[in-house]
Length: 336
Ligand code: SAM
Ligand code: SF4
Ligand code: SF4
Image (cartoon, rainbow, N blue to C red; front, side, top):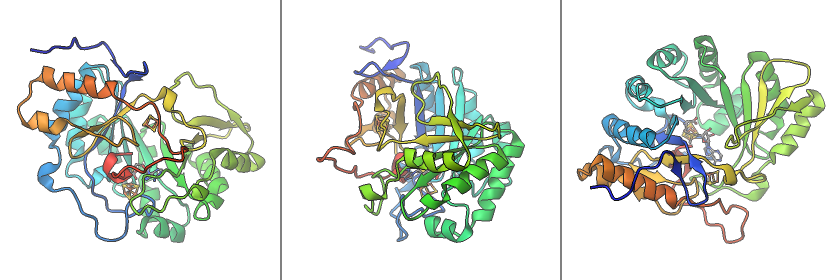
């Protein structure tokens, strides 16, 4: 019998309401973004360790019954997993979900965006770090910028609005493309969001000097295309949002986890592909819900486990503290 009474909403010990579950469905990827995965052969998790779609659904349903309203499917690259559309279709049917989204490198979207929408996906966030083919190849290890751009067009055509394009900025590598990305936002009517590089890379190449403060990029864009701040009602939103003063379509956002941390309003929790709950991107401990699930735990026991894990959510990251230790798991395993 359950010992805890399920709360109406999941709250951590700092009184933050956890509404946003990110589900990594695979640690594998067809790209090798150098700030995320090394070029050398990766050691993938054995297939038997990866949660099946049935297991993901069972856990997602419990999270939603506890107050989760936003689900994001991510990875690794979620679209390398077979028939992700069938998972989306089943997640979309869970009662209580207000927002169902996916983060992808867009490589497979050119002929699948419409199908994803028909399956019930509401939004897609695309990762794109360069708009020049050579630099794109250098960053991702794949010479496939045009296919990714076709994927973005397909998402726009499929009407999966708003289309968000995430760009991780690294000094000396792609910070010179900020204005070009602003032009891309205006041309396509998409939301470009610049993300500060975080110490979650596999190759341990992160250095503070490589982080380009979002504010520096904003000023550079503002000098050419004046921007005005948009009001946000959603405190847990990670991006500081700006629109073009001249009324051009598109939007620019800055996600500044290093220079302007937003942990105080964090509403996120993560489920890794191999069935661990991670309460923070920078967690050094994980909560093994797969063991319980596969051991035949009841629904109430799984719900209690989730509530207890959320209560232990970290107050913040420690990137800016001298004693900061990079977590062992990297972004591709955690699910960004
Ligand atoms: N493969 C998909 C993609 O790239 O969109 C989904 C998974 S990927 C890990 C999710 C996001 O994490 C991407 O937008 C990626 O750019 C971002 N990311 C990966 N490593 C990062 C790092 N070290 N710092 C900041 N963002 C990172
Ligand atoms: Fe793959 Fe996404 Fe990591 Fe790039 S950022 S290597 S596309 S998981
Ligand atoms: Fe939330 Fe952790 Fe990210 Fe801070 S670092 S916003 S607490 S996930």
